[in-house]
Length: 229
Figure 1 (cartoon, one colour):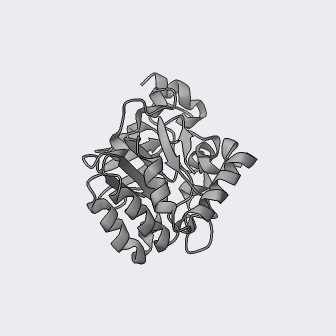
Figure 2 (tube, rainbow, N blue to C red; figure 1 turned 90 degrees about the vertical axis):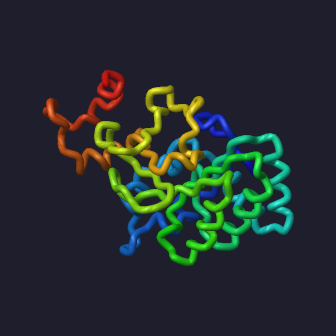
Figure 3 (cartoon, helix red, strand yellow; figure 1 turned 135 degrees about the vertical axis):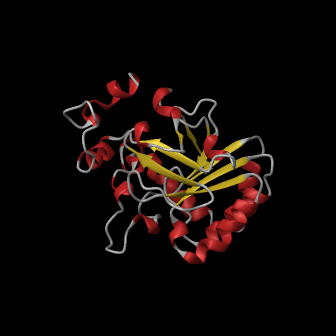
């Protein structure tokens, strides 16, 4: 079952955050830094209808008709995002997603994931990225952390800390992508998302030193500083 995300201006398909994100936890069993501030564990995502939709998706993808059903759902779509919450937590799901993407060449697919940390997913990730209409972006675990990969993404405290990376412009556009489609583009190797949730700001406050010219952490007044730069 698809959901419409106002920020993206397109449809997405998702599962429950954390529960369906095996790679959201480190070797110690604790959530990795970025996942501790995950937007998909807050606000609207806690509402019963949102939870029910994601639980339904976890049942439906196992059905034999799911690939055909998804292809039909995407027949009029030009851009699609996988996993605004959750992840492709099994190889079986990942290969079904590959089948959907391969059967919808008219639609560009963006799939962020942490499952690249498990080597058994390498083959299906490579197969997905080999498709002309798919970008699988490896998500980093820590704020400001750059990782290796064909396509990657990271969370940053402010755009000033980013080098040679496309910074998501949504913070300057009312929280919306508008006409930006960098996340779907094979020409964009790295994308940085500026932290925007209160939980993520709290995590950053505990590790980021004040920027030059400020006697406090810049995120204490984040929207004002952002709008003036």
